[in-house]
Image 1: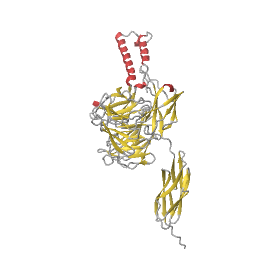
Image 2: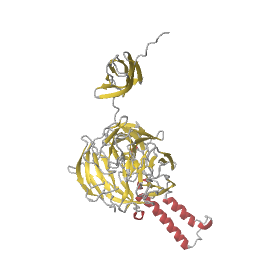
Image 3: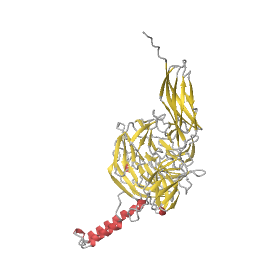
Image 4: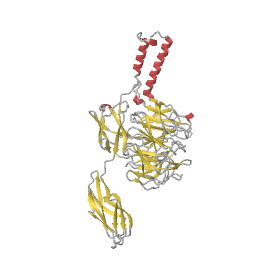
Length: 624
């Protein structure tokens, strides 16, 4: 961040130039009194400007521009921003694009996409890969892709993953407490809304579809709660709860604002040990024409009900709401009338969840309308981009908001806590990890902030989870969140804050469940060819993980008629192998047979697939 010179130093140097006879040129006191007064007014104006930064923060327009329409963005574990545009809201565009913005250099590197990821749902998997679900199969009317893909920050490439049962355009995807991802809503490949729910598990793919009794509208605002259920906060005025155990919805409460909050925003307010991880949801703006109203619901209450919150300074549709390390919420962008820059809301606001107040966060320069995005950076600033009021045009300028917590009262840069090291880098639930910092004695709070993934006025990932700690000499002993429902597995930014509310630069940590003992199964060769009436063998290997030492019992399915099989040994303990012998008979039909070998240990099972090719005996050779 470009750091302003302390105001007192600027005033001192400038006034000295005005009244020091040794100063050459026009700065000597020979200047006319009117000029001196004007210059002094300029100095005072500058002083007020820099001091204002400590009250409302500071906005900056970046010199570089965005070469693609930034419809979807996600914070990578590298600190860079993934930008997914796809066709970029241009029906005739088949040059599908994505890119990566590097805050360190200010540059954007673009790359082509194999298919149109425009209007997808995106979250970040527990291993740090952004996961793209669905997209645009067709425009006008829109149809949704069933395709999915993951972006690997290590290679900079997208890799297609298992497709869903049906397409989704405008879906919401939600990371659950065990790291699985649940997909809701979106238009399918034929045009109607996808009424089914699916769950994606890394390594094994999508579950079968299941009905849920109610279908949320497109891009529903959904939040995982500490009890493991998923809360729907909009855009309609009937709030619902999805039970992840029964897979059924139930009604919770109606909002006070009776009209729908179309393209309004919603956040889960900070979960902290001090508040017992009490789940409170806040909704902002929305509607066309838009409202400036906000509402908050406490879902820990015996009978949850929406309560009106403080209004924003302007009505907002197509807005953004960004959680900050202090627990405050930055609201910005949007307009009174949808996709209308003449009614753009340029005033930014800051909501204080503790005090319940809404205050000014200054003014951004460019209208941020449909398809605009805002996301928290590791240095605790907010990156703002996009705005697509009509097809074929978008706002290329990028802005940075530096919150007031980054400034001292005189407008100079605030002294920030520092993080020297976090150990271990992967933390498990309820465990204690260490943070080395020279500022240990002055730290008053610490938070984990989940890396964000934003599109269409909603961040499907952002989350603030407070953590408790004890301070030692140059070290904090920090207690990790209690479970995955409070903090789903994945990458988080750890921020340390001092008594003045000034945050450190965030340090990435990976939150993970304790490694579960498990095993994997493999078999070779992949194919064996055998003459009917003869036998052949496969080697089945058991590879333990995380200290697994259980007994794995083998079985095989898919054998053709007239065939038997046996394992030696029948069960393998820990690491080892078993020989599968398959014996055919003269009655075994000729052909190719896929076989599934299954290993079972307690409630855990894994499979490996091989092929068996049964052929007839060659004809006897006839001598001359």
